[in-house]
Image (cartoon, helix red, strand yellow):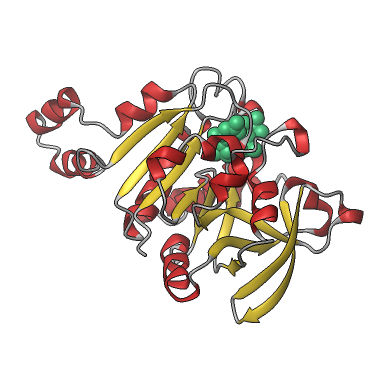
Length: 290
Ligand code: UTP
């Protein structure tokens, strides 16, 4: 069965970015000149996704406006002959009917946010993208995962090795390597202390899930941090269905974290020919003070 829908939970409070996130979702913060969410939406459409489900909280208006047409800006750009920019902002608007919004009334956790999309997703496998995990790669992660899903016909999460002292920030796996870049997950635990972690293999914000996950998310059991956790539901799903991990190629930036966000800006800006040189010159200058 084809993966047609992707759920984007964007209802977190983004407390690590207060005050920037007081009135706006952190997914609207820009990396270079694009909101973080746009990178992930482009990744989803490139992977063949046909419908996007945003689970929003605050900041809904800015997000909705971003993916909608702006006749005022279009008109001004046209008048000024700025055709490149005009094309850019027209192209970023998905086709009518391909974006659905639903609301998570209270930020009860990632698992709960995904559960809010249950009736829209229905009885089919679907993707989940956490936009604040921004991945720089020449093999877009979701496209690779869709290919793996076509073959494995089971849930898959993107995984990577993290520093051993950082396990309490991630869902951590007990897993066996079954192919070059695929592991079969035996167990998982949300945010374990380094001493309790079964490994340093962590789940990153890209998933393909079978609809069975909604049965467990629906139990609304609170886990780490008092939140309804996706990892806990996946752990229960494991008793019934296999779940695989895809060790993606590329560099991942945690844009929900201030340092990670700055690193992402630097890394993505260095890819832009028109600003690369200026940046390198600046880095060389300030390096003298390090
Ligand atoms: P985070 O764990 O980064 O939490 O959420 P957060 O609230 O966004 O940020 P901080 O920790 O307070 O700074 C991971 C993803 O899950 C979504 C977030 O929007 C983010 O994409 N999320 C989290 C929800 O949609 N709802 C929730 O209740 C919690």
